Image 1: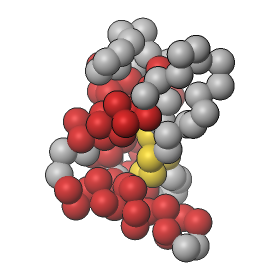
Image 2: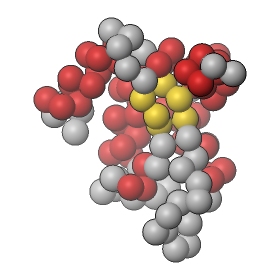
Image 3: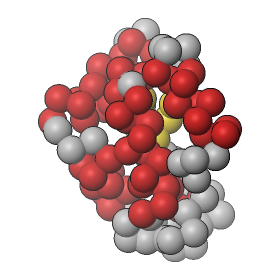
Image 4: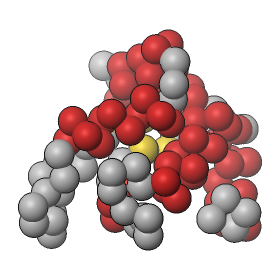
Amino acid sequence: AIDHPGFKALLRLLAGGNTWVKLSAPYETSRDGPPRYADVGALAKALVQANPERCVWASNWPHPGRNPPPDTSDLLELLREWAPDDATRRRILVDNPAALYGF
């Protein structure tokens, strides 16, 4: 939950530039479920707002233990909700991974 002390601590670390977060696999922890995973989406939006320069996205492919597996394109589409502008999405999908992994 957004007001959980552990999540607040993560937001502080992220805002301070002391950590990276991966936006991935909302189906793993969501209680609301597909297609929007609204509960996890609220957390993802808060992470992006805290410091979009320290967020990366991952598909979590091949979605172990999920039968049928979620559609990766549907999961990627969620990023449009979590990071609504093109520049932020480019940062999360391209620039940040390049910086983090040294591409």
